[in-house]
Length: 417
Ligand code: UDP
Image (cartoon, rainbow, N blue to C red; front, side, top):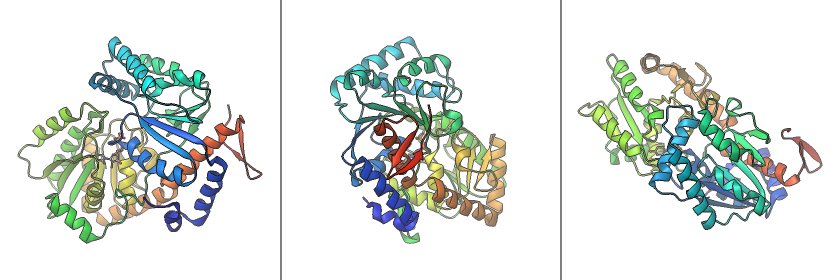
């Protein structure tokens, strides 16, 4: 694991100094993160990098994962889809399973910490213990809550309003709530195996080991096998574009412990692409960080044709590698891509096919988009920025102030009620 000092060259001395200043303010304070999976998906990706850095700064940071059976994960996946505004058939039994499972987790978990930092809806209901514990609670929502199913949102809202603060990734995701809301975008770690620089030799060796041919330009989508990532739309757009371009599509995914639909969606994707030599479907273990890094680096174009998306770390990862990205204009993706400047945003399969053809035929323009994309990530979406935002939020809660945090005699405005 890198030390904070290792980030100095990339993000500047001021940023690192500021983190130390905030860290001193929070030294010894305990922060317990809770989410639903240790591997797979963006939340686990961020926590695995964030928690060690918080500890380096002196914050007593921990990370726990709630446990649940198949019926719990099936229910919470339906809640997830419904909160994202996608069609989902939530049943009354889903709510019962949720309540019972959280009660079991409450009995098993120690939630003794100055701040309990709950990630996403799955563990949101643990907050029922807040009054008894008398500590501070933050709900960090990683999904696009702009058009939630009203019934499912009402159920979660009853929990969310018990928190001391909520964090959303984008202004449009925030809801009308009685608690203070912060906007904090996710981030990637430029020094992780997923994102660190690789030599062409390292990249080549990994592609050879994975038996990925490099005789044609590679177009890639990296995503859990999830319908909201629209793998069927990706295949159709690629086939439309590939009638006149000669490229290869890689659909790269892997399982997440809290996503029970993955195996079924993977089987559908395999069926749809059977016998097509220009499409490769790869299912990798969730720890394949170097492999994903190499695949992203070897790609000519990265797709993220999501139908709903909280933020889309895969896009941040690709932009950081200077890749031209074509992404659906949904959820958090427009936060990262300014259309025709730092990537391309599309609204349809036809639009995605059009831009695929265009970028495959215009490598200089594609490279310009990629370079702009990388600069955008450097400025806004590296881990150190998110670490600073989280530290400010912790300091805000610890201070007991309503509107300001006082740091070394200076007032840093951090939100109002
Ligand atoms: N990821 C991975 N292996 C896979 C698919 C995805 O390691 O097979 C990683 C991907 O590189 C990214 C994260 O999982 O870091 C996905 O985060 P994102 O925000 O794109 O989507 P989510 O899965 O959280 O909806």
